[in-house]
Amino acid sequence: MVAAGGALGAPARKLVGQWAGQWVPVPYSTFIINVTGSLLLGLTLGVLSDRLPRSRVWRLGIAIGFLGAYTTFSSFEYDALRLIQTGHPWQAVAYLTSSVCAGFAAIWVGNLVGHRL
Image (cartoon, rainbow, N blue to C red):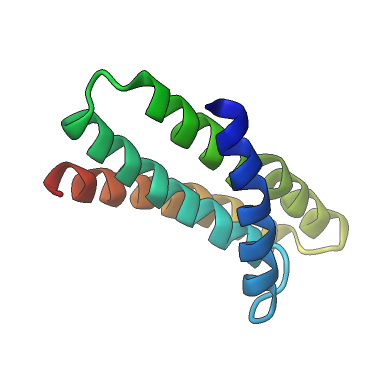
């Protein structure tokens, strides 16, 4: 299930990155991927814990496989490094801070919604 989820999550990440890249530059396309991934993880785990509390297979496939391949923590870190290396340290700080805060807010909202569905 992890491999199958990852096989779907990686191309989904590429497609969303390309789509977002039409409107926003890197690192903001990575930001969109990480925040939507956090929202989906919170939503998924909220729904699964209420509806399928013993379904470890689905959690592995969706949470670890799909969303693990979809989200981009290493890209997120690299994008922040590139901002610093290109002379934009304050943008890097803003990017890192907003990514962590927005990601946390998204996982919280997703989990709340997931428990209510």
